[in-house]
Length: 240
Image (cartoon, rainbow, N blue to C red; front, side):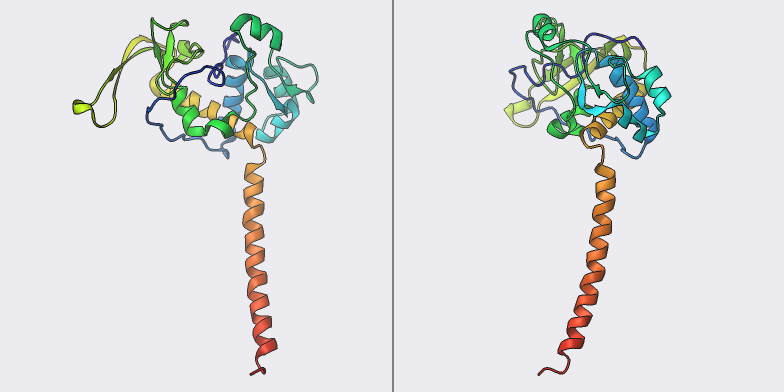
C-alpha cells in the first residue's frame, strides 16, 4: 500500500474541540494474535508513519511479534537505515508546523492515553462534512481537525444526528453510505482492529510478560502463605 502523508491520529491531541457522547464500541484486539499485530504494523507504516512516529519503540523490537529482521528491513523500515533505530516519522517538527500548524504528535502511548475502545471507535466514525476545513468530521471527536486517512479503504459516509424526543435521552445517530471503499465493512473493521492491536502493543510491549510474571508471583505468595500458616500453627500448638 502506498504511504500517505496524512496520519490516522493527527489533531485529536491538538484540536480544541469538545468530546462527543458517541457510544464506544469494545475493541476486539488481542495482543496474543501475532498475525493481527503484524498486519497492524503494516497498516501503521503505510498510513501513519508519514506524519507520526513511535519513537519509544525500535524496529528491532518488532521481532517480538514474529517478524524476522529481514522482513522488518524489507517491509517496515521506511524511516531508518539501521534496524536498531527508533520508529520515527518521515517529516520534521518544523515541516509539520508549516504544513498543519502544529507538529504531529508521537503515537507511542496513544493507546494508553486514549484507550483501545476509543481508538477502535474513532477510526470507524469519520464522515463527510462540507462545513469542515478538511471535508471530514468524526462522531467520537466532533470538529476534529484531521482528514480521514483511511477513507479509500472504508469509503465515504454521511452522518445524521437527531435530538431525542422531548429533549431527554441519547442522541440518535444514522449512518448512510456515499461511496464504497476498497474494503467491505467487515474487512475495514478487521484492519482497524489490527491497527489498534499494534498501537496497544507499542504502548506496552511487555504487558503480556508482566501479567504472566504477576500471576506466577501471586501463586508463589499463595504457597508461601500456606506454608507460613502451617508453620505458625505448628509453632504455637503447645502455647495456651
